[in-house]
Length: 234
Image (cartoon, rainbow, N blue to C red; front, side, top):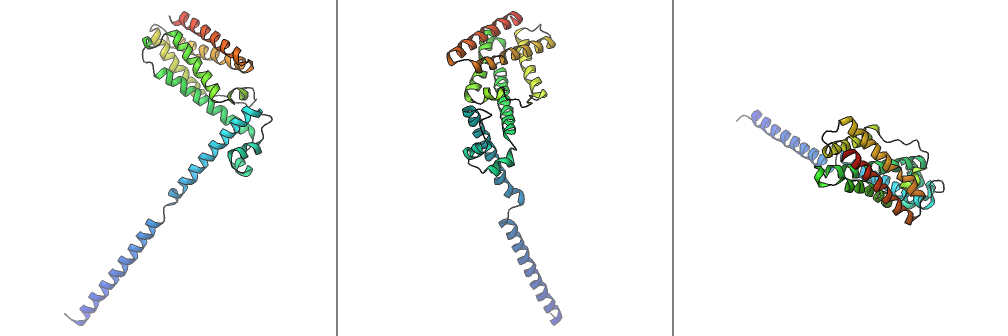
């Protein structure tokens, strides 16, 4: 082999070795440094935890002190965050109360929807039992979230999402058709709408009543709703 060829071969091997080393170093650097999206995940999780902590603290403050007496400073302290951080998530008490109302409404819809989904045939749940379960689920929610009732009287301009409201009524309407197959869809929807409005009218009475009176009110509402459903669907 000529000297020129040998020199070219050596130069090629050296260049190849250097390129491989550079590529390996680059790959190692990529492995060691996660992508920005990976680094954002923990921050997102912390943000979600802070958001939930503020809502939980606000719910407790509104239940114990009332909406007017509770302050953002108290809520932030109870949540374990600075007041500046609290304002980054919620600009004022109204925003916290609005978010809580939204959360409570979503959970109430979820509980009622689960009740409907759990009964595929009319024979599984008599109408009286249906009325009892629907009301019990709402009372259970009020017990689980003591701020639920106090926030109902706060003027927030809150209104449930129309699509969510319609979906819940459609589910009850479909259930009612199974009880009475000849029922028109429009009539079934109307019965569902009236039933839910009647049940929700318990809220202000329940909020104003003493504990012993609350049990009696709940029993009265169960009787009213059961009798009305029997008259319309029986």
